[in-house]
Image: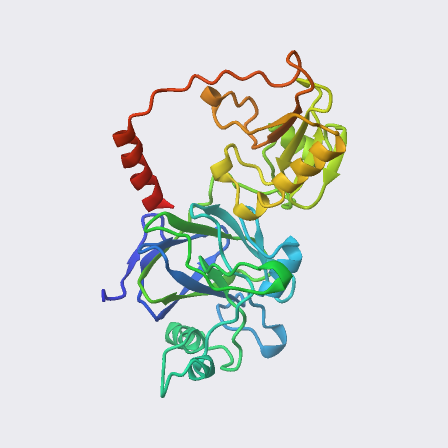
Amino acid sequence: MSEQKIAAGQSGGNSGVIEARKGKAMTVTKDQLLKIVNTHGKQVIDFFAFALDSDLKPPSPQTLNFLSLQHTRSGNMSLSLRPGSRLFSNLRQAMFIIEEDTSPGVHDTLVPACDLERYHQLGVQGHHESCAENLHLALKQSGYPFPNDLVPAPLNLWMNVPVQDGGALAFVEPKTTPYRGRVSILLLDFNHSDVQSVNLAQRKNIRIASTLNKPKSLYLNYRSDLTMAAACIFCKIIKGDIPSFKLFENERLLAFLDIQPLSLGHALVVPKHHGAKLTDIPDDSLTEILPVVKKLALAMDAENYNVLQNNGRLAHQEVDHVHFHMIPKPNQAEGLGIEWPAQKTDMDKLKALFNEVKAKM
């Protein structure tokens, strides 16, 4: 187990390692960017944040201001988070904004911090480190003790707890791979000037760093009231700046008729999360797309139709915002024309590709 280390960052911030089953507290200020890196992959971290008064002292019990996941879910109207999502306090103040997420974007906002009683229920005898205990140890060691009975629900970075049919929850393996999971969280300008953030690593070490450099741009989703991809025509349609023949809309997607159709009834289904390619879109923004495409095909009474989604210029993508086409094919002349230059298969190469791809799934 490597020792916990803190070093001054090049931009005047701090960096270090959070040991497995331990916690670390850091003070971050306005416009400071907090980067958390999943070095081993398949790792989970509990993220807490508490606002400090202007004199860097904990506020009184009456003015406690801390990261609140129930207010965050309400503020974003979503169970999940993505770049552009804001993290709200118990006083409904926007404390942070997620500026970057290089992982698959699967994080949990529902599960409370583990504590000793939880481990006893699981059959553990005697003492066992827990997130609740490590939270207050880290705060105490940093010189900012908060009430011992205060254990807010954490943001569980990379914890994979899907909501199943009927509302049941499941604990499944995180989707992050080593060093591919990096979450960057920007502290916003709100009533308190500084925030004490606490990060707790489970099972393996985690890297954490803060910098004083304000990002040049923020990658925001449609719910943010700050900035969107201003040049994107689909973002403008989503905002209502450009009129459209809207067929269906909910909080995650929009469907409308194509005004340069390949056939009558040609429609587009567009996730409201801005991303150029399919791999840029969080999973929860994709789950409803094919059901809506199915509804469009049924509503159009399309007996023959194509569902098309292109990624990149060589693949004929013209608008850098993911979109799905539902294109009726009423006859040979109308609809999508496709050439399919099938290649002769080299079975050895195909087997090697199969083994390589399956290992990454």
